[in-house]
Image 1 (cartoon, rainbow, N blue to C red):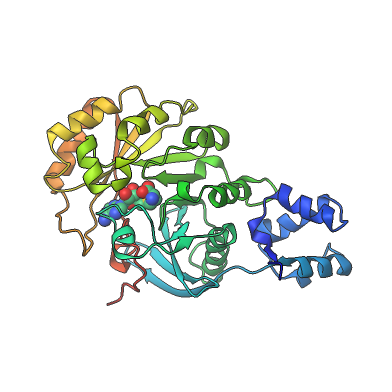
Image 2 (image 1 turned 180 degrees about the vertical axis):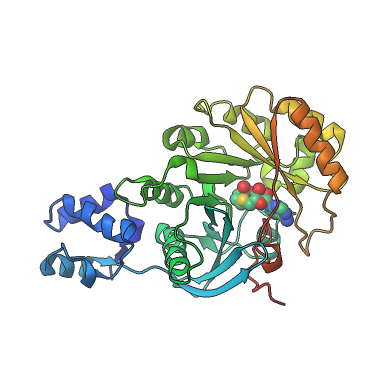
Length: 350
Ligand code: SAH
């Protein structure tokens, strides 16, 4: 039997193509996009400007389903919410919503588990890598959660999307790319490119072309400025060296006020010394960056202490003294096990 395509897997030009095959006019794709993404109505019966015969064709040709919400854990102290969403094959995916004043950021997953197996990250080391998510499952997180937060008066609208949940976005390139096209599409979510951030552990295939084309924000999980040490904790570095990653970053054309975010996990006495700070400054020379220091969130499989507050501040001060922007990420959602690297699908309550 031919698999029916999920409508949320399609960019507008792909939808136009399908509709033309169904002997419908192209502009119907635009109308459908407006219902699905602008009005976020997924019930065909409510799409008032589409004829009954078109609706029939659509319901025969496409699946119009998104994964359903399975569980929500909220942390009232820091206004973060962890969502578990169930996929059609009964797996769970995680997304975290973080609210800071008017900024409502949703951190989404692009895989179930992660094949990269960075030793400090619970997703890679404690969960099996199962599969990549399809576009409708990535978008589904946004649609389901948007609907939930509005209904429950948590927030009006998701304003920022970060690909920092489970999985490596650049190893699910096609589906992530389609998601981004739909997010940016003026007939789709119509989001600003500055409100979308993709984070990678250092997959460089097509990276600069991708960022140069879509101009979304890029974050790099750099964490270790020395090759040998990075290879120990991030196995991907054995295949794609830091040197080649840095070279690739230099090919990215940044607009005047843009920069690349360098994520740097702060591990006590492992990568938080002056030697590391000096090397970091050295390798970042010539790239417009902002270093985001991330205090390590403990995971059970990696027995290392987070850096002390003193080291964190010292490290930040040194880098700042070299005229590189620095921020310290205060990870949200830790109480609900939704902090960076803690995505392992438990409810966080126990
Ligand atoms: N695979 C992508 C997307 C995940 S982003 C990437 O690696 O960039 C999640 C971010 O949290 C990454 O920067 C990751 O390195 C960081 N992280 C992983 N484990 C962590 C932990 N235990 N504490 C704090 N940050 C962690």
